[in-house]
Length: 231
Image 1 (tube, rainbow, N blue to C red):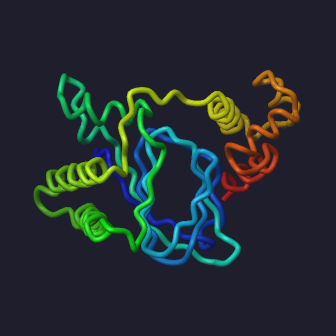
Image 2 (image 1 turned 90 degrees about the horizontal axis):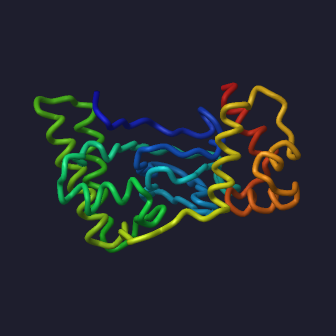
């Protein structure tokens, strides 16, 4: 199986928002139509037509329609860095892939449709899309080549910055703990007091922390997560 997948994101056809989550893959979103608001590590990003958003592995993020728009269509790419990493000693893995997987870099980057290097990134995104779905002979090698080219441009133009140490903040760790608990127990009765006890905070303290990181309250997140799972 290929450690690479592309799927369509359509709102509100499929849903009007997607709850906070994270995964081991690097995510790239190419906005094909409309506008959407992403929340990544507590920061809000308005993704406009043509923009490309890249979210690093294990970074908490969610997205929803903006007030100004009622439709959003995008191609979402999930790229496992295992495809270009070699866990036997390899300088590319040790200098680039493994630090990104260990979150020793910025959490995300945005390539705006009117930015200097946009015309170099969009063709790669389109070629990845066509190669993935056409399945021509040797397409696996072409996919790997395109991903290498994407990573080279992200790093060389400074969209991804490898840092010696970027320890995850305590607030993000607490929010991640709450999110993981909700994902496992969303069918049970979940209360703010119970979540606060889980992370050893007061209800007020947890509410403030969770909203600062995610942009929504704990209970709103529980309700949104349940609605999404019910679809």
